[in-house]
Length: 114
Image 1: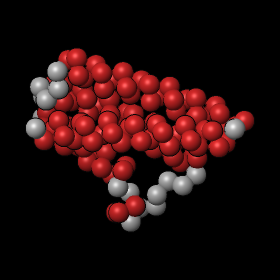
Image 2: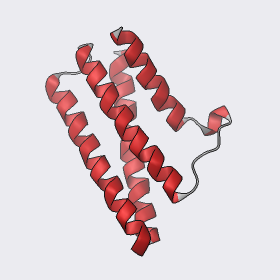
Image 3: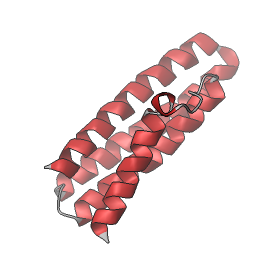
């Protein structure tokens, strides 16, 4: 059961990241990218919990991932608020957060395989 949840979480992460390679339209608008960011935060949280349960992450490591997910969520909220007054800054913030989330996803994928 735990392995199935891990794989489903990782598949969801890969689908989010690899939409373009699968022929699915890549998110292009700010709102689409923001939505993908929020979905990715949720997927990262779920993956960390699943990996912790499967003993692929230590409690401290899982907490660190959750803290980073909290930071990413807060950053997404800030970017959403900035979008109304400074779209360029909002887009830059969103890009930085998506980069951090991609790194978290890569880390979790590596932990799943180890």
